Image 1 (tube, rainbow, N blue to C red):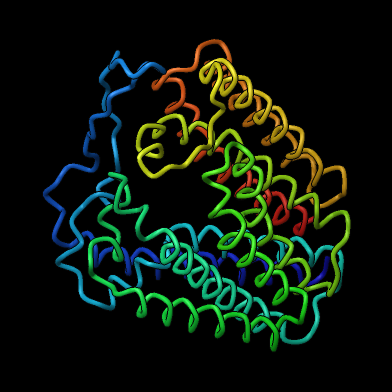
Image 2: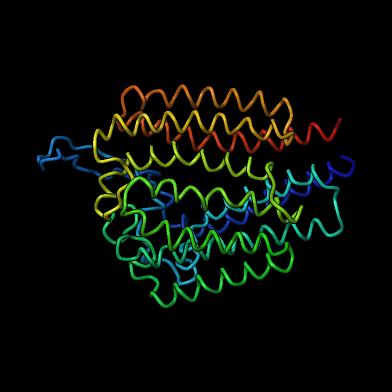
Length: 363
């Protein structure tokens, strides 16, 4: 573990730098909205299967999703095409995989440069894939409240511009990964693009199977970081994959239930048709159990220590307690609470891993 602590500092600085860049970039979008509320309520009508309206309810949408984009510059609109917040999560989890892989292999020459290029390359490929996804869904996005003001349906960006932007971002990022981190991260980024854009996107209209398919691209980034250090994929790498894969089920199922009427406008079917509340609530509960079990696997592989295990069990126990709400009775309030808990759960685990490894390096 000698030389490990300085690298921990470097990687933490890298993550903070990525977050700072994202914050500065996003501030451009917030500059003309500082006086507005953070959330806007959008009304929906929940209908009976036979078509009779039975309930009206409101769902709070972040203003970043529904605010008018007509005042954005072309550069800002192109930047929004890459879903910067989602791309940032991709970068952070890839860097985490890199960080943990160092515990299995001595620090080599040029690791700092490799980590930087991993972050840049992964970020560019993620933004390229997101832009390609927006291009494919540009017509559907115009039908849904939460997406109708995105750059393409709002007319800020033309279709050909989105394609050029997506191609340049992805090709540049994939090239950087190939040159500086090796063929496996580059191939994994290509695999992610294919699954996300060409398999997951059309599967959204097929039914709940889309949730399983969509969880794959979101779980790949730690594999990219791991392979950037070791040059291979093994059981420990897939332990990280499993954690990210299972986390997406309670997270997205809760989101899909909250926005089910809006998704229906776009023709997306993420939830079961029969006994929606009962079945979806059960799946949320099972998904939470799965992610809690998956969170222990990195410890079993020796990637983390006892500090991480204690924190993960405590966070998982709280997550499971919250997820019992949808299992007992799925409603807008229990789904929202589960969704918000899932948003906090993942950062807690990621921070716990970093702190755990930093403590271990001291000893």
